[in-house]
Length: 424
Image 1 (cartoon, one colour):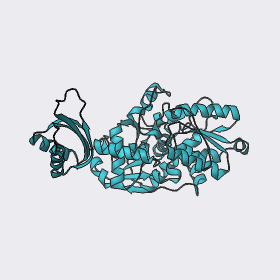
Image 2 (cartoon, rainbow, N blue to C red):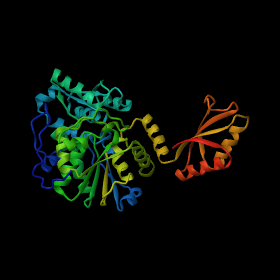
Image 3 (cartoon, rainbow, N blue to C red):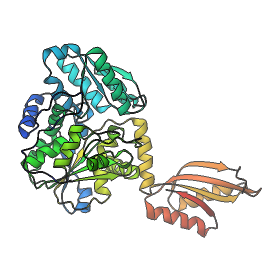
Image 4 (spheres, rainbow, N blue to C red):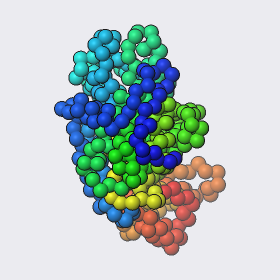
């Protein structure tokens, strides 16, 4: 994608069924910022020295995970709803979201005195559902994905006259999200690279538009989960191309079809789209917890995952946007374990050994001597390949990293154990 630095063609048409085309410029983003004063917080920048070596210079984390309602989404939702005429406000609003947009719409509706109905996928994290209801919205669970929930929201809007607050494909939404870009330029004036998560593309489009119109030399990189990367094919085709399925722990960016408006703006202003794996996402989340002391949801941490994965061509200072922090505690537990396994710090070994009294105690003693912390033990005696006097013992343990894992395996083999399987 070639960035357009002229800033003269920022107007873009919306998709079918949307409001008429509205120009988006830095001026409209600045207007949105004025409207948001007293509603949102200007989120802080946090230095990340632990990432500096990977990019050869300073790295800053833009902490939208600390935003009101837990993500950047309130910026666009409030901007869109504050600009509704009185007649539209009376009819109420409807939205669809896996959680962050839902909460943003609910908070904005509460502040503006507007009735809000929000459709969320049936598998949406319970804390996000509960928070959205607590903000006063009528939450309805429908569909298995954000795209299916959006279909229900569109049908509801057509049947009731409620105004659809699209999660990304509207000029006012993009303008609101673009206020993050204004803050980045003020907080890190010498920034050279900005890395941003992308699902439907509203945040990426808004930030990129601001940066490229004001500082065209800044490189803007969008990041998607590999299992939900709709932008590359859409950009290649020149219009939104839906994915048949999305598979990722990053539910906040699990969008199967980006928007007409956002695809066009990303095409004009974003330099590169890259993807990250589930392992890279979980490692990034774990490192943000350990090193930055920040709770970030999987979707919110993909920018950091891209840096850890070795994203090339970076010119520091680099700003990585942490787009949200609304993570289900149960998912957080699983992701932490997944991240530890991906980093070689949580390992599961299957050891075949004689099924005799004292054998397990000796195995555990060997593991203790080499410094492994055993957290789970399972006996398997039903494998038809086992001899009558053998057992497979599957041991899950915490280690200090890949080198320590290798030392554990080497120690067991030195002692004559058959390590039949290793799942890092």
